[in-house]
Length: 271
Image 1 (cartoon, one colour):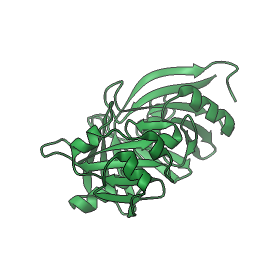
Image 2: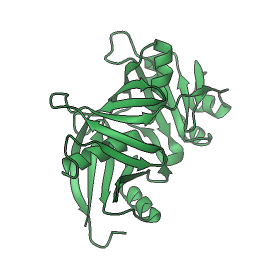
Image 3: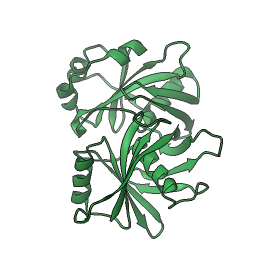
Image 4: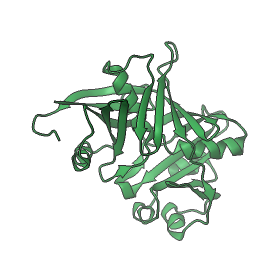
């Protein structure tokens, strides 16, 4: 029997933040099988954690494809290892991934359950906005950049971010993984910037809270606001806060998580 969990990441409350399925394996699994499980879970990401001789291997799948980097499912995977007793609270979760070694540490008691991930910084570089991006968002961006994954678009206000109604078909026709829109937060907010993230090409029109997007947003807003430590709010219907801190060519991402479901894949559905 293979244990599987659903964890709401980047939230301290169930049914908020971004849900991820986490499948804990005794050994690496067949890729086709992992994709089938991810399609069955039908969440933005399913994380597969396989124990190896020297740690853990981590892979992430959307319902339609494997991805090279995912923040919320990494947070969920570490949380599941601690909650299941496979790791002690004082132990670091270290994952070998397609984006290199990623680590997660648990905050001390009294930290409010915040965990911190060490991820690569993925700063965008300025590019000309493709027509499909302009038409898909229905606006002229204040700034358009791109990293190895996504387009990053700054718009004029938090209100524009929150009220935007994208054309999924047009955004899905773009090269790259997806589109992140962002703006400086309103004065008096509990955050420095807001964002939303769209990945129709991966079968996820809008991702609730995207850790990997903040690998681009952290260096972008740190330069714009001249601050190394920032808080982002992803303004999806579920919403969630992500703490960010630049550390050289790395970004430290902080968030909370809540266990929502614990179960097992039924006999006969294993790899």
